[in-house]
Amino acid sequence: MAIDDAGETLAQVGEFAVIERLVAGRRQPDAVALGPGDDAAVLHARDGRTVVSTDMLVAGRHFRLDWSTPHDVGRKAIAQNAADIEAVGARATAFVVAFGAPADTPAAQALALADGMWQEAESMGAGIAGGDLVSAPQWVISVTAFGDLDGREPVRRSGARPGDIVALAGDVGRSAAGYELWRNGIERFDELRGRHVAPQPPYGQGRVAADGGATAMTDVSDGLVADLGHIAEASGVGVDLSAAAFSDDRDDLAGAAEYVGADPWAWIFGGGEDHALVATFPEVPPAGWKVIGRVLDGAARVSVDGAVWQGNPGWQSFD
Image 1 (cartoon, rainbow, N blue to C red):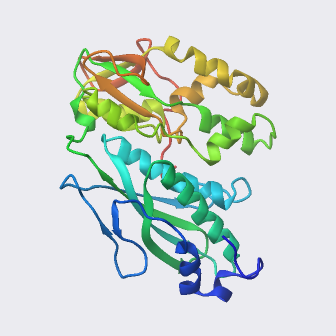
Image 2: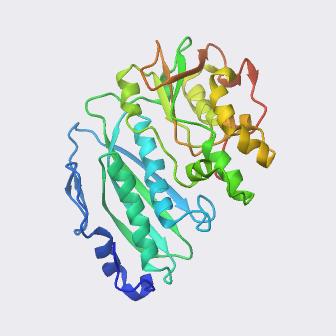
C-alpha cells in the first residue's frame, strides 16, 4: 500500500490518517457485518456462540525487528492467535488489533505490518475488523481473535481418556531451530529461519480433529511437552510420546542442529511457536494427523518412551 513519502513517520502522518491508510481497499469476509470506521465492529455469529482468544507480542520479547520484517511480524501476530481458535475446533472469522509504537516509527512499517496481518487472515478466510493505534516506547501488538464453531462443541483440554491416541497436525521444532540460527548469526537453512519469524499453523485441521472425534486438543505454542502437560493436568491422565514418531522431524533438523551444536530432540520436545495442533482421539485419527503417542492411566505426566523428559519442556513467559 503506497504512502505519500517513504520517510513519513507515524507522528507526521497522524493517527487517523494512518488508520485510514491501513484499512483503505481492504475487502472484509462475510463474517464481518461492519468493519473499521465506526466505534465498534459488528460480526456475524452464525453458530449463536462466539469463540474468543487474545494474545500479545512485545518487541524484544516475542520478535526482533532486526530479524523479522514488519510483514513477518504481522503474519506471526495473526497466526498465533488463529491457532488458539483452531485448537478448540473452530474457524477464525475476524481479528481486532491494537498496535503501539514510537512516534518516529516510519509509517511504511505500520503499513507493512498490516499487509502481513491481512495476508495471514485472508489465507484462512478471515479479516481484520478493527483496532487501535497508540504511541508506545516500543512495538506492542495485541490481537483478539474471533471464531465460529459452526455447530460443533468446543474441544477442550480436559477430555483425554486412558487408551486415547495422541496425534499431531503440523510440524514441531522448526521455530526453535530457526531461533537458534538467528541467534547465532547463521545465514543458512532459510526455511527454518523463516519458520521462526512466520509460523505455519495447520489451518483447518482443528475442525478436522473435532469432526474426527477429538477428545482434547491444544496448539503447540510453548513446547510439545509443556502443552501436552496442560492436557494431562486438565484431564488427569498421563501421556507417553514415541520418539520414533518424530524420526523424520529429527532428520529434517539434524543439519541445523549439528551446525549450532544443539540437540534436535530438544527442539522437537521443548521448542515452541510452531503452532502445530496436538490432540487425543479414541480411535485412529483423521487424515492429516500423525500418531505420536498414547494416553495412559495414572498421575498427570508427560513421558517420552516411558521416561520423564529431562530437557526443557517449553517456554515460560516470566523466565
